[in-house]
Image (cartoon, rainbow, N blue to C red):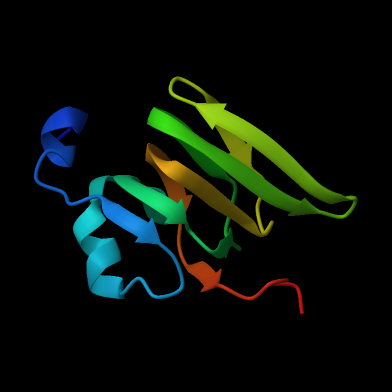
Length: 130
């Protein structure tokens, strides 16, 4: 096992940011906008850029660490008490609790880096809990 440093800017340089991300975004478009920077536990460290709505996602195997590298996003996390809505900008970090539905809305664009355990469940349903 070789330990190596990752140049995040270099990893992001060849990627294509998703414009107006939404339920019409293809898997190929998403894959072209995100890079796997390094393996991490049962998942990886990812980085990518997009504009628009990510749809709902959740991770059953553990918490997800989200850091905003550039731009801004509204992160909505569904909890037992309703919704936690966080306004995030470059330099901010949040831990999304395990098995909580969450989504990003970035109308002006955002670049994120996440430590995400797999698998990830995705949906564009209005309420993913139903």
